[in-house]
Image 1 (tube, rainbow over the protein chains, first blue to last red):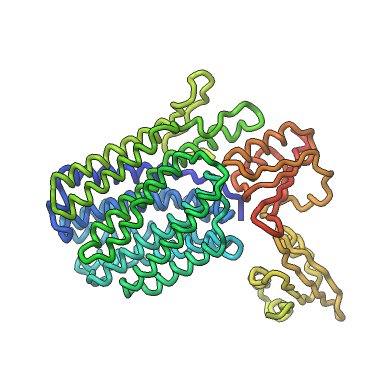
Image 2: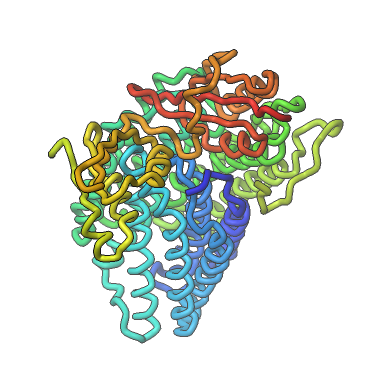
Length: 412
Length: 167
């Protein structure tokens, strides 16, 4: 087994994710999808999956390929699979969108194949480092459960797609769809995001490491959700307990941090976390599943992602550009690559847009919801602009600025 | 759980099979403080280096009839993969750095700067909050050797870096 190196394709995954986010929000702003169309309509399903798979999924896989080896202190397997998996993921997501929207069986079959192969490739890369670390590093436990949930989510989704295409598969009955959502949103994205955000809090907020007991409790809760997923109400109840442990642990770590001025990425993540408890609570209210899911997927998960994207971009860009110069020439601090100001505003804007969109959708006020999507688009555009500036080293003084790295490929 | 897990590879070899996979599998299942007792029809010298690289120590005993018994001890905190095995023979460190409580990538900057400022062959010691996985390839690229493991208690990581002899 070799050494951990920076994954080369992270920014390509991020770029694809931003593209899908722009596409999904653009369609919502144009008046497609909910609330103008029913949630059950093909176009609503299409937009939902462009958002969840194309945006959150791409970011989650891209970030996992970069950071799981760091957390596990063990390298990826078959790293060359990354661009192949990205192509299949992006193509599969697009095919799924078309398949839903146009009720096009061939596209649904292509989506099932592309997304399954891509997820298989992702697991082939990620499972070996997780297994290598599972005995010595408790933080990889929730990540392992997240990967198991990823496999289950994609297998179920592929089964649904084949069934819709009329070729057997798995009937998308309400209970199965709830299980699909809990596996994907709750365990793959949610539990993984909880583990990674606690790690970032310790790394970039200089807080103490998450207590092993808390990580074990999160993992046990996640495993129980995985087992109970056929009984959505029980799985959600366990999810509430897991969330309480996460929030309690995060707050305790935050109070014990050594860095008193909170990093903008962590402060932004704090804003995103505001959507977590209300989103979860709505899931227990009759008729609240959709707005609750929107607050969790758009407010919390997407907000966390948008909060950390500039930080991750700056850190990886600094490593790529200045890593070879350390000890040989003066190097700027990593923070010099990013603008410190304005990030809280962007996250507040995103969350405001999410709340407007969610309430507009819930109350079936089309214009209101489209306005919310437009606000979200503005916030996402600001994050994208900042990431591009970071990647192009635009915040560094012109004098002595090193050559710019490639935009979506890391030379490591 | 028994203190000693015995693996007799003589039947495997007699059947014409390769026992390496079984040995690694058994070694990986050892709990802390447990011993893997290997019984082989010869002294398994090539295996020693592999196991040392994985942080195991061992004691060997010649048995009757040319057979060998080797006890592999699972270390409390094995050396990270890629550690230089000869670190025990390195000179005393010329600098000792406390790199805890620093936001990444500051620990890497300080450590690499200290190593680059040292005389060839000198050793620098550092304590960090976590295993610096992105640092290791950089050390290797520059020809520096290193050996590191976690502290027996606690989460901190200890690292020795020896500056390349020839720059």
